[in-house]
Amino acid sequence: MTMKLQDKVCIVTGAASGIGREIARTYAREGGRVAIADVKLDAAQAAVDEINAAGGRALALAMDVTSEEQVDAGIAQVVAAWGGIDVLVANAGVQIVHPVEEFPFADWKRMLAIHLDGAFLTTKACVPHMKASGKGGSIIYMGSVHSKEASVLKSAYVTAKHGLIGLCKTVAKEGGKHGIRANVICPGFVRTALVEKQIPEQSRALGISEEDVVKKVMLKDTVDGEFTTVQDVAEVALLFASFESNALTGQSLVVSHGWFMQ
Ligand code: NAD
Image (cartoon, rainbow, N blue to C red; front, side, top):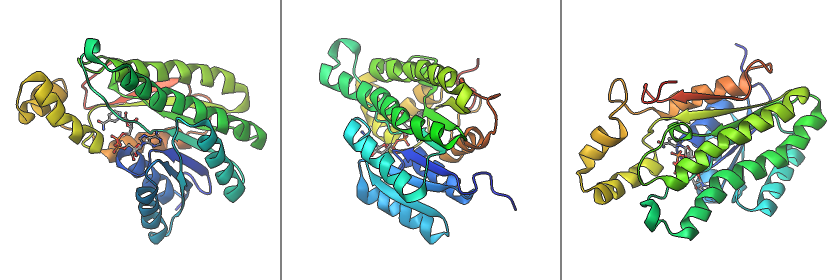
């Protein structure tokens, strides 16, 4: 059976948990060599051990994506180990919710740093290797339905996730002649640690039960009241990573059970 990412060198940030971890598993299953970059090194190592035990190839990188030094050192480590970079998934992210007038400035800056500086720094570090190989590559940004739509309490997240679309389109234009593609995945709510944390927070902030946060806020506008799964998102990440031509670049694909339709 041919594998879709045979020997491709892939870096997934924030891959110690949730969506990133499932993308790393999926890429490894498809023959990719996967670097799992995260601030949580123990959890990253556990993800690596799981992939290697299943016959895949993975390595862990201690990387805070807001640090240019750590990003550059991590990418250099991958290139030293595996000779280049074919796929980058800029996925690391957190959520902080407050009404805009109460949003601590430090939290606002942290949100933009993790989501936007992280995507920029990893892109900047990977593009030269994608150019140098002559093979180009695929850059995937983890956006959100909040790259297209807004929700109350999420000013920083919505601003950052919209910003990723601008970065993606620019990287797609600059990368075209080098075969470097850039796309954004825009998931609806996926029940990861990031979302589990929000349920009680939103319940308190909105004065409604946790059950109502799920039913009446998070999944209200889906076609079927269902959460998107990590596997759903990983399948889209596999499509973007393995698509061979510039026909599919500069795009953002919503995977949200119809919450947002465009
Ligand atoms: P998660 O909390 O399960 O995983 C996020 C990972 O990012 C964690 O392992 C964390 O340690 C890591 N991380 C955080 N800050 C970092 C930093 N500065 N440097 C490196 N790693 C860092 O969350 P998730 O739900 O899997 O989220 C992954 C991405 O998907 C995020 O960008 C998030 O915004 C996006 N997203 C999530 C949902 C959802 O409903 N869960 C929906 C749309 C988009």
